[in-house]
Every structure is written in C-alpha cells, then in structure tokens.
Figure 1 (cartoon, protein in one colour):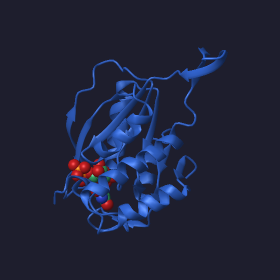
Figure 2 (figure 1 turned 45 degrees about the horizontal axis):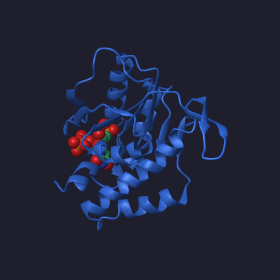
Figure 3 (figure 1 turned 120 degrees about the horizontal axis):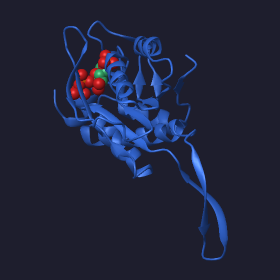
Length: 208
Ligand code: PRP
Ligand code: URA
C-alpha cells in the first residue's frame, strides 16, 4: 500500500469520528466533509512544484515562490461536491471540473451521466475528490477519463477507503497516489464500507 496514505493527524481523526456518528445532522456533516477535505488536500499537495519570484514587502525586497502547476479539482457527483469548497479556499485559482457518476445498485458498476471536459486538458495536476472509495469502480472510471483527457498527474483524495477499492485503484492505476482520512475494514454485500459512515451523498444532501 505504498502510495496510500491514511492521515495520522489528530484533527482529522477527531473530525472523522464526528462524521461517522449516525447522530450528526446534514449541516454538521457538510461542515466536517469540507474541513476534512481541506486538511487532506494540505497533505496531498505537499509536493506541488513552485517557481521562484521576487516580492516587495513594506520594508525590503525578498525572495518567494508561487505555485507552478495548474490544478484541477475533480469532484465525483454527488458526494464529492462537498469536498470542493474547503480545498478551493486553499487554492482559489484551481479549476473545478465535475464528473457525474452513480453506482448501479445491482452491479455496483459506475454509470457516467455528466462530463463536460473540453477536448484539450487545461490543467497539469488533478485532485479527484470523492469521500468514499468503496469498490473503487467510480475512482477507476474517473481516473480513466482524466488520463484519456491527457492530464499529467492525478491524485485521489477521499475520506474513507475500503481495502477492496484501494486494491482496485492500485491494480488499474498504480501511479495515482491515494490520500484518505482512514482505511476501513471491508465492504458489506451491498458494497457499503464497514464501519464507514453510511451513504455519503444522502448524509450531505439530506436525501435517502
Ligand atoms: C458513492 C460515492 C462514490 C461511490 C463509491 O456514490 O460517493 O462516488 O459511491 O463507490 P465505488 O467505490 O464502489 O464506486 P453514489 O453512487 O452513491 O452516488 P451519489 O454520490 O450521487 O450518492
Ligand atoms: N458510497 C457511499 O456513500 N458509502 C459507502 O459506504 C459506499 C459507497
């Protein structure tokens, strides 16, 4: 599991516990998803390239840096939407490209229903955002789309991953690092992560 990291940060662990709690209401759930996403993105972007630039402070000239890479945030609808804002606050010039997928309840295979990517890639590094990496079908399909688009570097940022989904991503896309708040135990026979947090889309949007 060398390219998989489960955060060891106490703030992430604290917030994840609240997120899992079945008594957490949708408003607080959305706040927690947003906060955890920002903390994970901070870890996931530690190796972004920078270029040197001069900066004039009120007192002197100084050397500084600015980000070199154009970043794309790619939330997988619906549940990935809740991860966008917290990360966007940290990198406001990032582009946001939505991918619409839902899991067929019988086959657990992803079905694509929204993709408005332009023909040529407009970013050099993409963060795929989805709280749940269950079977991994949605993450694999989204990575396929982004590689066909021509993105040079792709990272997956999620909240909870199951061993099955991590293996699926590593089998299909071993070059894509995975950043999570936790790796859980297993999937149940309906493809839900155990212990997990239930349905991440329904809990955010108050549906289901
Ligand atoms: C959930 C979740 C992921 C997917 C993960 O989406 O947000 O996108 O399942 O499962 P997988 O790893 O087995 O593909 P869902 O299909 O429930 O759609 P929603 O976000 O619109 O609720
Ligand atoms: N999607 C969810 O929202 N939760 C799971 O546990 C698995 C897939």
